[in-house]
Length: 272
Image (cartoon, rainbow, N blue to C red; front, side, top):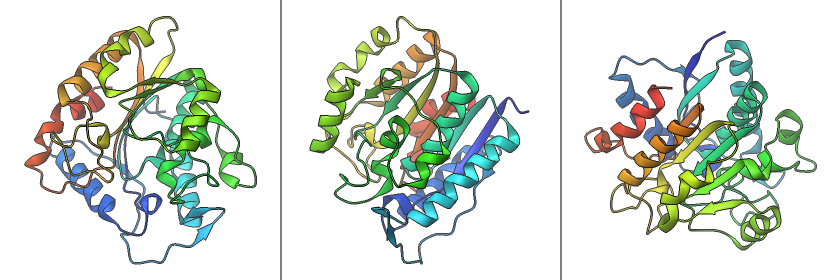
């Protein structure tokens, strides 16, 4: 059993037919490795293949295979904590599922401009990176992914920095009473963490940041949070929870000089 796993999964297929996430993830991994850090890798090829739509998901077969590989690696290595550098948000399903099974109830703090709550049927794009939380919150009928991975409860989820939702996502949030902190309210995160003493998992899609501070992400959205707000939030979470995992996803920046602004977030992941 390992206490800590540094994991690299450059998945791009869940974000459409282009592979900028593959190269952005590779550049970010290379930047982190300058700190004498090593990663276990789920090897994936860059674009060059035609993605087929199956089960209302573009690239379903490839993505399903990738999720299974992540799950097998986690079972094989048995980490207590995981720091992940990756491509698309879809890789979170086996990570969150594994850590919840290992640690019990898990407070999932989802820093993201988007809800990632579409079902395959409701998704306008059929891109998997807009679906992982839906798979983590409920069974998706006639879809093998739901049969392989565990669930979290709606009350374990906090959507932080969210500001762009599709109507079906809004309806789902209302129905499930999921807690939200839009960018202007991110300072209230400490109050949301009072009460339970669950272990925490922190998902960071870099599009949670304001594009004026960090623009090169897959799906930038105006009026995001600042680096200072993100780093302060991570400190508040660490002061109130044992953090079992941090992910850093959806980067498309390949200039390592411009990645220096990520040092505070990277440090949080490496210090698990």
